[in-house]
Picture 1 (tube, rainbow, N blue to C red):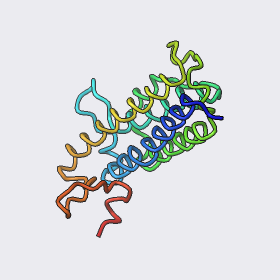
Picture 2: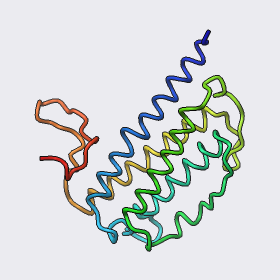
Picture 3: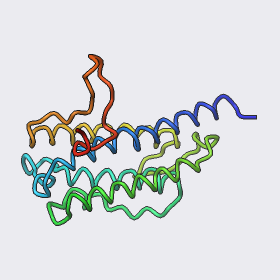
Picture 4: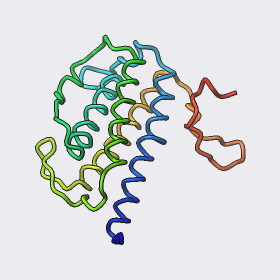
Length: 182
């Protein structure tokens, strides 16, 4: 018999998987498809991050917090390298790295026992419970997805068409690439 807490945790984990895989990643893919390699590495100023930095950072963050922190894989992250990189990795490779990281995350989350969401972990120097770690990753991923969208709109001066407005009501439309739209 499953407890109410386990059902709630299972629902939360399922929603986190869906947001990462089915909402945030497709929006990032749409953005990266619109950009050149040079645009992916553009920085507004030395204190800002490029989209390339954000893609590396997101991959590192999800691996550290979910694949390592929840899944038990070794933590090999060197966080500062994600921000120090300024070129040399194509947009295609950056996106492939992020997608691979999210596949690893999805595997961990799919196999994770919801009864363990209140277990304590030490991740990135913080003492957290698993639920905190998962909430952090989803919130963090959403924030940087928004930054990637903003930077793409600034660089391209165009609507990324995440919503179909033809019926008068916004309908999500980020599941297919801009190039696939007729």
